Image 1 (cartoon, rainbow, N blue to C red):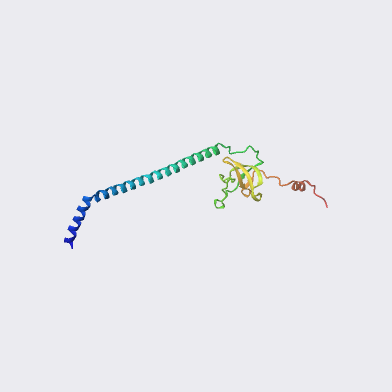
Image 2: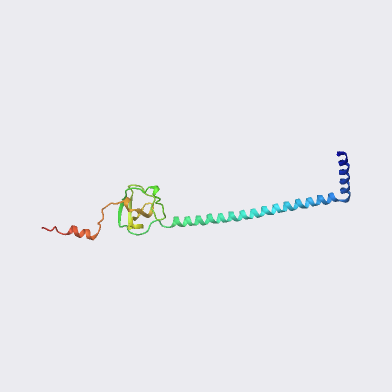
Length: 167
């Protein structure tokens, strides 16, 4: 069998060489390789363009965030409102209590002096709006002790001022 295969293979190769089939095959292989390389280059260019757009968008986003941060830093931290009274932070809010919203005053320590700008405000009137060295915000009134006890209401005052009745 092997003896029959060798002359047949040789005859086929010689015939194909003479009529140009090898050259046509080599040309077709060259065209296919060239097309594959062109397609690969086209895909690389598309990826590079997409990455360029993403980089540009990220750069723009970073610039926008930087502008926003600068605007917030330039914005005054304190209002010009007069404080109603001064007080002391008795206890810091536990970090588990999730007291960290945008209106909350979080940079406080126990024993720190604050100025109360508005008393009994916020949800269920359970907060005071206070100011300290780091900013302004809401703080639970249960954790704030006024430096000078405030008068409660005018009704309480009228009872204290009334003369004792003899009877």
